[in-house]
Image (cartoon, rainbow, N blue to C red; front, side, top):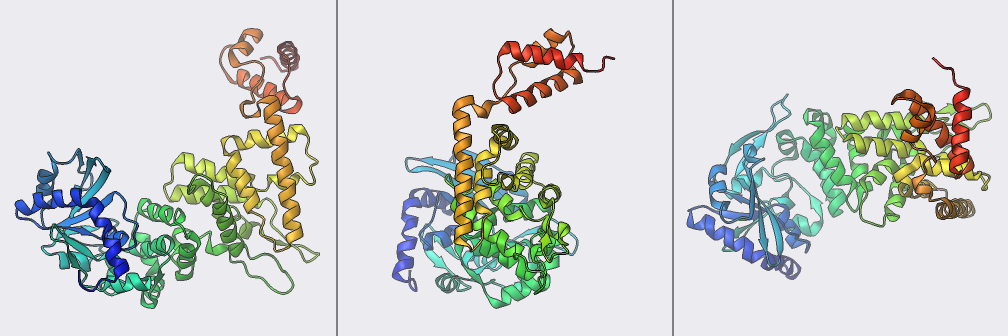
Length: 478
């Protein structure tokens, strides 16, 4: 393949690993009179030495022809994207399973008000590549002959680690405004820098992102956050003004500061907390933790007060921030589960600061664990990450104090199985003892016994029965 450096030639050797699958399907298309090329991210990742088992192809065959050619060859076929010219398939081999997407040569564009792209099909690989988002994704390898196709010098941009568009940035972003977010996402994933003209177009056209559906925006934001360098992508969103439309709470953290009212730069602090939280991840990228770290202080702008002594306060910003988190995440169409988890972490992120030098009672420690529930390990990481002071002595003291709290939690867990705190009596026993039917009164009784359990630790069954009867005798009887 002329023009390739040794490193890139070695990168493309990754194609040899997928050759049995790629060549096999290419021959099927060739025998039917169609072209098939490996394209886009698959070629880019092969050149970067990181090609996985997800393979993207493009072809001159129309969607129904693609379906006909892959059926009987693939182990599974799905056509959920067929309206956009894409057919998906899975091929199982001795080397593993390959997930394949085959898309008809196409061009797509938005009109001024549409949220969905209009799809039209093309007839050449060159026509298809010019409508790709960035030059590093506009390279192809014709199969089975392995001819390298790079009409927009994507290889040079890959070497320079630069994001450029095949057409002008204005044309590209008009065709699909989501590409502006994809620029930030690729900056975060690949550690590439967008070209100056790309940044300029993103800045000038930022408002156009509003015609893209919340679901598509959320998907790009998630990929950005789960990338290796999310802060780089987030800075690009903020600096170009895109964040003003998709995550306005983030640029709002850039609070004005003056010589009389000094306080932390909340925006920079939040990005640092995100990086520190990532460093504490033990089982791969954690979207819940990363969202919570990024959003934990978004209540500060609304709660900022300048005190008479010259200090700046943000009272109850965690409560306000939790509500703001819920609102933003719902607008971005996140699942209820994810909304609840992230907003709960935002709400709890300051709780530890009441611990002081270890003054909490065992009851307070139990409540901390119970309130965090299954989010406890994430709350540990978020709380530790929230220390960004440059005062090493202060940082070390906070770390020691949190070590102490975790040690107490561990001791209590061993002593009382704290993870499964529950009253000594369940709902059926409460109803039997008090002669109740299912209803709110049973819930109130259960809650009272849970409070006793949290306050005093485990109690014997007889003590719980006596406490329940005493509580019930004091309740107003209808």
